[in-house]
Length: 461
Image 1 (cartoon, rainbow, N blue to C red):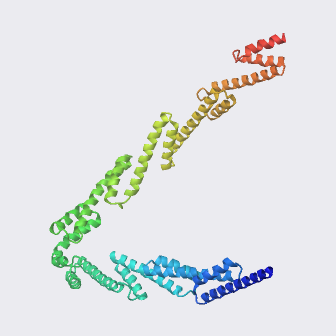
Image 2 (image 1 turned 90 degrees about the horizontal axis):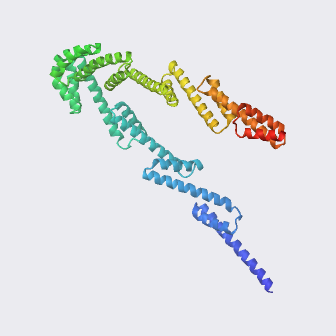
Image 3 (image 1 turned 135 degrees about the vertical axis):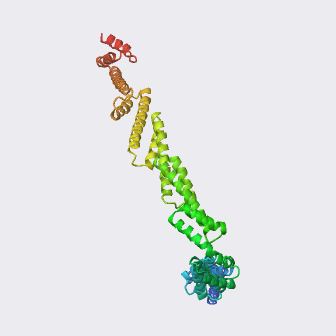
C-alpha cells in the first residue's frame, strides 16, 4: 500500500512539473509575442535550468538574447545620438543594422547620424575656409549644408556673410588693381562703395585719402619697382627710399625697399659664399650660406650649396680625424671615420683604399692577438692557424715568421713527446727512445726528455 502511494505521489509530482513547465513555456511565448524579451528570457532560463532540452527553448532563448542585444545596442545608439556622441551612435546603430536591417527605425536613425556627421564636417570645413578668408570655398561648404538641411545652425547667416565678404574682397581687389593701373577715379568709386557697404573695411579710408597723393608717388614707385624687377638693387633702393620717405605705407614700397636692401646684401653674401665654396673653405661657406638661407630660404642654389658645403665639411672633418687615427694605428676608430666619409662621398677612392688598409691592419692585429693568446696557453695548432692566416694576408708581418716557426716546432715536439710517452707506457722502449732522441736533437731542454732518454737507455742496456 505504501508503495502504491509513493508511485502515485511521483506521478502526481511529474504531472505538476510538466504543468509548471508548460505554463512557463506559454508565458515565455506570450512575452515573446509582446516583444518583452527580458521577461521571456527569465522564463526560458527557469525552464532551461529545470529541463535543458524542453521543446524549442534553446532556439527561443537565442532569439530572445539576440533581441535583447539589438534593443540594448539600439537604445545605446539613441543615447549617444541624444548626447551628441555621433561616433558612438554610428557604431551602435551600424551594429544593429548589420545584424537586423529592418530593426525598428535603426536604419533611418543611422542615416540621420551619418547625415549629422556629414553636416558637422561640412560646417567645420566652412568655418575653416571662413577663418582663412577662402570665401568661395566657404560659400560652397555652407551652400551644401543648406541643401541638405536649410535650418542647420548658422549656416544661412554664414553663407550670406561669406558672399558679402567675397563681394567686398572682389571689389577691393578690383580697386587695388585700378590703383596699380593708375585709374584713380574708378578706384575711388569702388572704395566709396566698399566703405558704404562695410565701414572700416581694410584700409579703404586711407586709400581714399591718399588717392590723389598716389598719383605723384606712383611715378617714383614704378621706377623703383622696375629697377627691382630688373635686379638693379642700388637704383631700386634710391627710388623706393624716396617713396617711403614721403609715405611709409605706400602700396608695398616699404616691403620692396626692404627686399631690395636684402637682395643687395644677399648679392654680397652670395659672392663671398661662392668664393669660399670654390676655395674649399667649407666652414666659411657654411656660415655665409646659412646667413643667406636665414634671410631667404628660396635663394637660388643656396640650400643646395649649403647642403653640399656641410657635406664637404663633414667629409673633410671625418677624413682628417680618420687620418689621425690611421697614423696612430687606432684602426677601429679610423675605420669608423673612413666609413663615415664613404657614406657621404661614396666615390672617394683614396678613402676607400685607406679604409681597406685600416680594415686589413685591424684584422691582422686581431689575428695576431688571437695567435699570441694561443701561444701563451700552448695551443700550438690553433696558433699556427692564426699565424698562417696572417701570412696569407701579409707576408713579413711583425715577428709572425719567427712565431710560426716556434709554434710548428712546439707542435712537433709535443706530438713526439706524446708518442714517446705512449710507446713507453705500452712497453715499446725502443720506439719511446727513438721519439725522445728526436726531441733531444730539436730541443735538449724540452720538459723531462733528458731524464726519459737516460731511463730508456738504461732499460735498453
